[in-house]
Image 1 (tube, protein in one colour):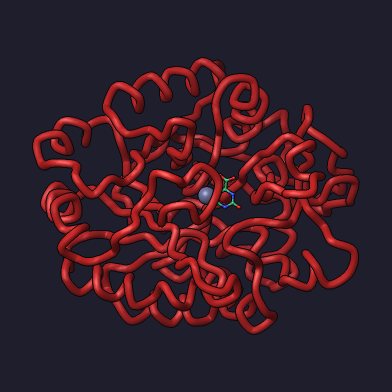
Image 2 (tube, protein in one colour):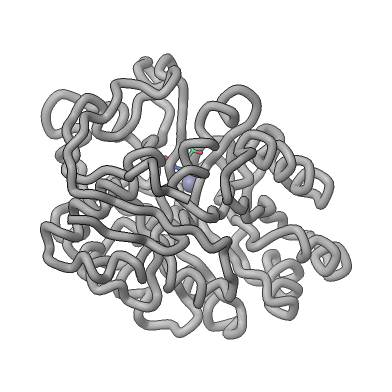
Length: 337
Ligand code: DOR
Ligand code: ZN
């Protein structure tokens, strides 16, 4: 059995910089035709020049592949209209992080009042720049996403023309909010479709499955699966693949992030096939995102074949999701691209 995906895209990806970028970017570039690249570097990507030079480094690291890095800026409340108008050519979206909520988000937003956010949001809305949001408060870890929903609602109501993407949603509550507002959309990761918190800490602790937002309950996973499996028009695939060196994951203070880029498409095919909805995968990994963002990625066919393979224990010094396990589908490297 085989499946050809046309221009699969990863709408939420961490590529890092330097050696890590050079190690992980080719793995995404091989399987995807484009990806929304997160700006949480140190320092974060906040200027036209930083976005352009980061894009250049990504293209350098992925030379030879048909792969378009779609750049983002790290949200600041005081970006002005003229700056955003200029930078619009170089970016696909702006990513908002609450201050300190996850990896390299220290310079994020502290004041979520509409007055504080309005200057940037107003300009984004007028210019048609989508807003991507890491939607968590600093409350109790299992409640953070649900507590953030009123903030989504406030922004969605006040800026009806602004496309707001709820990144890596993990809860039934977020799925319900998504469906209530026309201008809300969402990305869903591979790991949140596969696991619950039980897989992370229910037995021996599995640091390579620890991420933010943390995986939630079975009923939450079920709600995510429901909209992903039907490829609901408002949802798209965003891996949130977030590589950290093994030493930062297998440590007393474990960094948050699941590295899923090299296994994402095979594991999605396996999951969609098991649910008997394989025909919806194309929409989930590309068509919906093209419509939501209004973009056309490089034309690229990626062939998946139903043939089992053993996921490597590591890619360089990074441990992937499903390390050492068998997956029932694989990318046919001869015909990728
Ligand atoms: O688990 C995560 N890792 N969640 C995020 O939001 C950021 C990411 C990272 O950059 O490592
Ligand atoms: Zn992320």
